Length: 253
Ligand SMILES: [Zn+2]
Image (cartoon, rainbow, N blue to C red; front, side):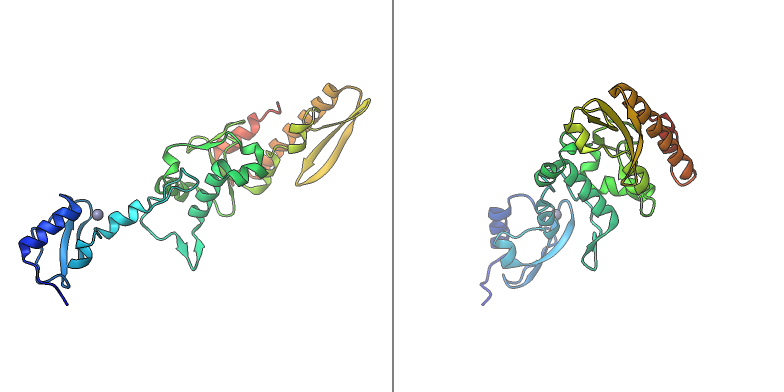
């Protein structure tokens, strides 16, 4: 069909639909089924069918940005590159999304209440910022950690985080059972006796049986701190100097 409009008609109708947003200085107009060049003040020139433009469609790049849905209500994927390869997210994106999920996904927090109260710093709520840090710091097969450099830390940020081997990550894991029970960490209360134990790679080792919870805890504390130091030695040169030093400072509290 192609209803005829004069150039002035086009500009007037475009103005009614899009306001002052676009620049039509270089727009050549023939009819409304003809493709026109429109200039977006942010992204530059794009080409669109005149009638589609007059129906309200605008710059495709602007539309894409408006469609960025925050992930878990907070994360913004502002990166323009490809994040999926053959249907699988690239590593940095997968790590970023999983960090957001640990802090802000209600279903995850129901399963892992230890993460309640954790958050991601403002900078890392934007994927492009996280990706830069990731590309500079990632070590193959290591995991993102927020506890080794700063014990008890609850905020994922460039200052607080490091990539560490899974074995070290496990050694820093808090046992859920002891958070609930009133026994000190590393101690099992059996009526009158107190058993100290240490968990290494998911395997429980007996340290001994003691008369008081304090004695049992002190022994556990000693072994745990020694274990962390031995791990620091095991991975020396394969972990950052900051992580190595932090492991030597590690104290059970
Ligand atoms: Zn635009």
